Length: 420
Ligand SMILES: C[S@@+](CC[C@H](N)C(=O)[O-])C[C@H]1O[C@@H](n2cnc3c(N)ncnc32)[C@H](O)[C@@H]1O
Image 1 (cartoon, rainbow, N blue to C red):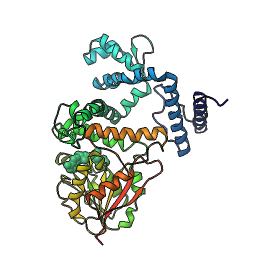
Image 2: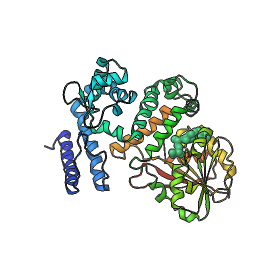
Image 3: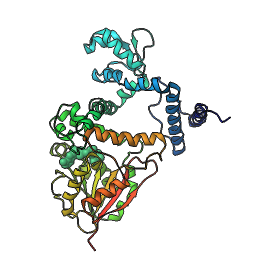
Image 4: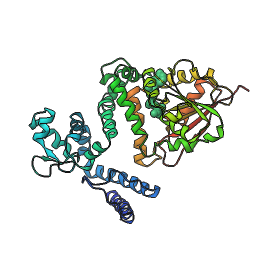
């Protein structure tokens, strides 16, 4: 008799755990643990990264099967991050001294939260390994809460998830039910969650602290494995452009442009974004690049003022907008396009469903749903991209979809061909 699925999964888990363990031993790396001195992250070579991903997928599936449908639904319907939110809200990660720790009483005193409530909230978080209680009443870090201390940007990311994306996702189904056919960005879960009729980015313009948190969180995303700027650098032959101008549309602080500029000294950059973002971005450009980087406030729904550039680069812009608005953005660009100009998108080109390992499929689906929740927009597959450009102008030609091993964003290269 063939082994049952749970035994097959257990074997996958054993095989891949062994591979990881051998890798740790061979490279004298401490294995993962919850202890404060555990490594924050490993830089795995590709074969070990594959083993780690296979392990996570098998653990996920085995955990599901082991819990069964009823317990899984009960657990998922109650899933929250109350413990982590408590820690972030009261800056508790920074109030617990590394190594020695502190007490619930001291934390209550410093945060002003009644000790009984704070203890309950934190003990709940401890079931997720956020802080620990080695002896009753004594609170110490785990490696997870220490990571928040060592990497403030990780705390910013988590806050953005909890205060922006999480609530928006919680209201997404209500938004679909309320505005089923809408392509409007103000008909997103985000708007219901924030009781606003403004789209997210307009809403953020009126809440600079939240705009700033969003922007910082985006910059953290660039450090995620698979999202590093190195993929943009190697995915396109920037050197072949010679002396050329790149317009980074909706480029925020121009972090991608800055990396390209550092590597290709003949290239000049115009970074465009909303006025408040540009005001801030201008103050942060590295001095050595200042003569090659211009920052201009430009609303990408209006005609592109930077004419005749060689490349118009959009990173993570079009997935923020439904087709109706992407078409407006692209049409506003057309008058600026000289013959030979190219549009390069750093976007996900979704693979056909059920062709990817489960965790990669989850990443894609989560990204798509995050777009729906925050902006009533979407991730797109190849057919969607082709259709979008064809509807905008049949002269657009999708030249190449460049997928790169390990990359979570593809490069989509498009040109506007003259009518024949
Ligand atoms: C998801 S972020 C991407 C930022 C940057 N390209 C990156 O990859 O880090 C979207 C950007 O679009 C900008 N944006 C939103 N609406 C805009 C508009 N109408 N005109 C220009 N930029 C806009 C936002 O301020 C934000 O910086």
